[in-house]
Image (cartoon, rainbow over all chains, first blue to last red; front, side, top):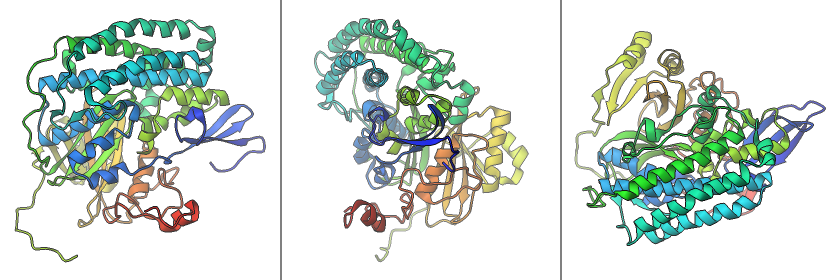
Length: 367
Length: 181
């Protein structure tokens, strides 16, 4: 941010602002109530994850990825395991793949639920948070029963799974699906039909498909703008090609549409989970893979559709047990860059809505 | 530390296969000898080009082959090589549903062209490459650090930067402690 006109003022938002969902600082340049420029200051949570990776073995590094997007730790773990498996030329067993899909989709629901609750809270609707956290609790309980951890799960291992499913897993997941679907309709009743909610979000933070592409924006933000692009469909991994599901899209690319897209995505996730849980293949949960993970010299980029967009891992192997270079392509970081475009000309109060609607996790932005 | 003698082994290299098709042909047709390699590893195609050809190549792929989404820009440090760094650009085409990598070697002090005129999204990605590796991009609209503090010295992802190393001067001045360790 360079010079100021006489009728412009600078407003510092964050890093300790509750609506920035972590430690994000935004320097807003204002003309009255209108935003004329934004400058994001990030890095408060920078832990040097990529540097740590170079100093750990492939196996040791696996739990670290959970700490990036800690609201979707399972997705992070899936992406990492797939990337290392690609380098090793290994594929997880069908049983492991199905379980991975179930847990990842449950995690997508959990991530979207927390997003919905906090986003509504930012905007002034306090009630949905209690409902969404109640349903999220059910998902976290399943994680806890499966692997003992609720948030940073470290659910997967390179080559498959560490743990066999516990007794009653299928029943518990199916029960969750059955009771969850009506809840989504309940959120809709609370919010979609609410005139204040609609008027508050319509036309706020508009971004079109072309701009999304220029910024590299992915995930629900891109789909709400109208492009039905989802890596689970376009480049399926972990057996997603076996499941029937739709890619929800909307057309106007505003905050309201992004809300609708995420609600629909939760319903689609339930569809996928139901298909997967109904026939989990039997067999081993670990594929035959060397005990010491030591990929051949080479490099690979593997990405998955995380709840927030394309999450990619670019790993360069020098043939040792440690990654020579590990790069994480974080969806939150890339999507946050479009904030400046989306907030330009908006009201200060809308900036809160726009930050919420991009759905960022600062642990992933800063790594 | 004295170097221990190691058993002589053949140098390990990436077992690539040639990458044929319309895209490598397009690149060769426009850039000729500036395209140094077109290969594929684990079914993931990549091209190695000279540094000056990188941004024009991105522009060409964007305009003529629909590679309209810049996925990522990153770098890898090879201290023993000259030029020392390797810049990696990953681009994707929604129309073709293809993802490719473009790579170029960058020496210490060399200034690659910024890709921001082609993809706005390159802005933060290039800032991160500068922040972590000290590679500056010429023509970048906002050449600041992004994750580390602005006054920090040193580039953490370089191989000669230790895992517990830090800018003690910055830590003492700003955090009021002797050292972060």
